[in-house]
Length: 167
Image (tube, rainbow, N blue to C red; front, side, top):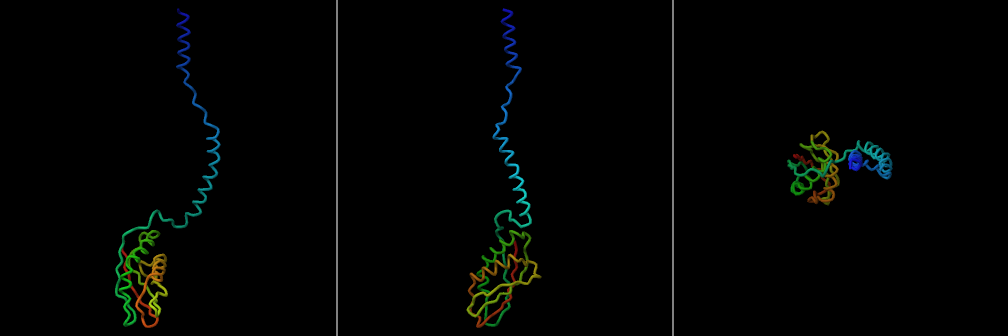
């Protein structure tokens, strides 16, 4: 009986003392990790190359407001109702510009050139104004050329329209 007990104890101690060794990592996992290392470096290099371009961190901001000031222009030509009607589109342009320039706010004075048919020929802005932004002015220019229909001014007209943008 003593012999059987020793054999049983040896068998038990051998099975309990040696836990199964962890399975080696499959060769494909090691090969995959090694193969992706150069791709990761390439992605990092690409990210470094594009880091200088401003990348919006999400959708453009929303909200904001615009106030239209007194507009200077030729007598018998009142463009203010058209500009006031475009306020939602002006705010859209403002929010698009804020996506790359979050602190943008304040006054910008637009110079709007209107042809004899009442169509916008172009929009420019005073670059010394606090809210001057190339993206904002370009958006307003494109929007007004596409959307604004002014009354016929009786020839070419240039008006000065002060706008105040607030977040």
